[in-house]
Image (cartoon, rainbow, N blue to C red; front, side, top):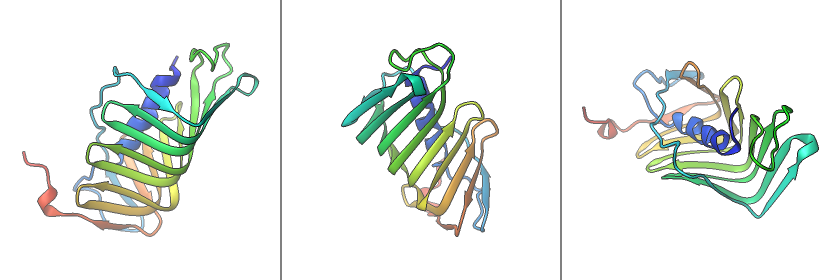
Length: 180
């Protein structure tokens, strides 16, 4: 079972995977590259703040609305709304004992970890398939001077493959290449 805290953290970790720019990521209508996840501390506490929390036990959802901020270590997720969809397995959304099936984030999604940032209008994360989809009029991925822009980012965590769709544009700064 995945607790609500680890489920939210999994979403953040997956969102951050898209921020790693790799030499295999080309500039085209469909850019594909192998993503390598960031090493983040999943053992640190998760702090969630919002203007309102509504738990609907009968619907198996918890809805955080208004200035949602999720923090764990150096990682920050901000949005207008975060909806956590729980499995109907006898667990409780109120106590965090229910397994999370899906996370839905909306309202100017912003994820930051140190110098890496991803933004979009909406995001979903399916816990079973481990697929993150970040969409928007403009989905922006940046790390320092490196920036990629598209309209839909799909990350398959089980394979590490990421795809940026829409009219894709990239700016890669050769001076920002990591030193071996």
